[in-house]
Amino acid sequence: MSKILIIEDEEAIADLEKDYLELSGFQVEIENTGDKGLAKAMNQEFDLIILDLMLPGIDGFEVCRKIREEKNIPILMVSAKKDDIDKIRGLGLGADDYMTKPFSPSELVARVKAHMARYNRLVSSKQKTNDIVEIRGIRIDKTARRVWVNGEEKAFTTKEFDLLTFLAENPNHVFTKEELFREIWDMDSVGDIATVTVHIKKIREKIEFDTAKPQYIETIWGVGYRFKI
Ligand code: CA
Image (tube, rainbow, N blue to C red; front, side, top):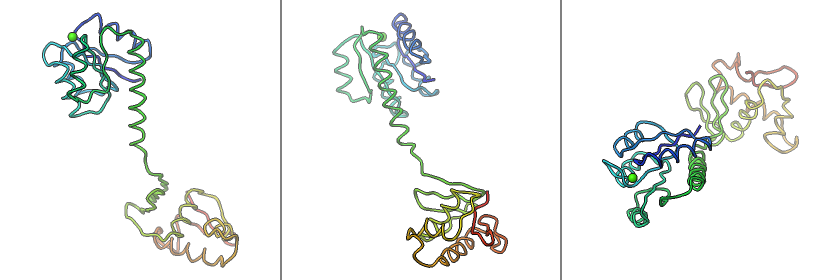
């Protein structure tokens, strides 16, 4: 559940905002001074902060500035005075949105949802990870086209990499040399399937502890190969 921190000294407003946000499925906490709000924002994880400008102790300007030094979560600033909003914009404190009081609770909820959705998209796009295949000590990064065997990186040629990845992505499936040749060399059986044997041998030299007793790529006599899980 998404968590929101409201930093607001007017209890009635804070409670109203909290009620509406909770009805919309958010978890809400309230702090009523700049100092306490800032401390909570720094020490706990929130998904969005609603920050009043005029607060006892540290004011909203300073709270916003301090939070921004550490965190990039959305900050929605509210103030009773339109002039203040213009001032906040001018200062470039890094607030994501501004609202003038009084505002309708439904407008607040709509803005909160919009900012949270935008922020979540931003975060998830940054966290886009490489496509990894991992089997018993072998780690294949398909995006970077790199391979590690028990933590040690090994160099593979393009076709060796493609062949190893194909087998590892289809574990326990027995493929004939013809099938592997068609799959990796993409020439519909034109050429020499002995090249598959040569490549398997090269791959084994890089991934197997003992190539005479392969633990990963097994030879199925008279049929082909399979990657054992
Ligand atoms: Ca206030």
